[in-house]
Length: 244
Length: 179
Image 1 (tube, chains in turn yellow, cyan):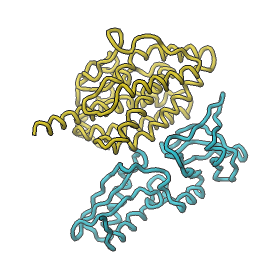
Image 2: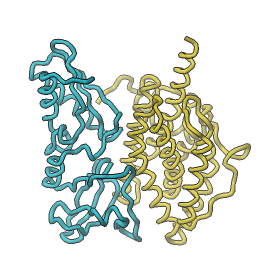
Image 3: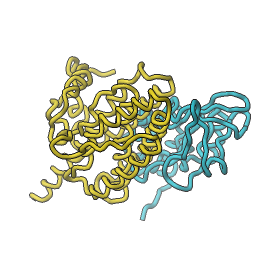
Image 4: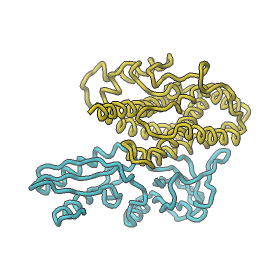
């Protein structure tokens, strides 16, 4: 009995971690609605956000009541990576965040889909959606990095700024049975190759250790996350039980 | 061993005849999203439905429409269960479904051989495709049939479509992208 419940606890925690990543990034991308540089991008970012929201709903439902988990938890109870809660910044920052995260999610879901664990059905579905997200981020990285001096400078700045949040993506999550070291190697290889093709420099700063970021999985979040949650949860908390 | 009773086959036909809420020219059977119907006792039925995209908001409307059709047929209790595996693919759209999409002004998805997105290149301002898949099997304009079309955006009015423009007749059109 104890082993079963320990396994259930690990599964719940894992579903929460992956579900929170999808939920929080979905909300951040949704913030672009009405602000994106061109209409096509507005639609693209909203569609990616919708994919992520769909994934979050499935994952959070594995961990409990999706609405309660999304709207009634305090900041310290969220288990998402610090990378996904980072503010949108300029368009280059949003694209760098997309590049780093979608490449990670694509590899992670790909591995989960090939297994027979509890996340395999969702991962098998979501990996195909994530392939489009990764492709979108890759094409924009190339276009901005290998574009004008201004776009190159901004893209490099965004990549440098978010680099310190990327180590956390490969800290093992209990209940997620994948080869984390292998994932990280594949991620570094793919991301590095895209950055080089985009004429950008792969940052040399630390991704792990004392000077890197990354305690989101333990419930420690960066300052902008609280304000994001306040906006995301405000309606549900102010009008409990309201429906459309 | 899974067997389908004549009643289940009849109800599957009915559930499959429901039009897609977003693309009403297609039925759910042609879209390939109704997986199975299981009769559970005298007048209780369970329907297995699979979403096109994980976050597809049409899934709720589909469930309600299926429930209504089966209830009108005399089934008292209908539950619609969402199944994710095996994942839906655009290859599940029937030939008839593809033909109807084209007539409706939406370029149908190409039949895929390998997983992953179709590779596209990005030009300085607009995007045009390159790569072996596209040259062998280009996305054709559903209006004039030209193979000379360009990609405007990977994501269009819904997550399942991309926005393209025909270089021959200049009409923009939606392309049901391969998944």
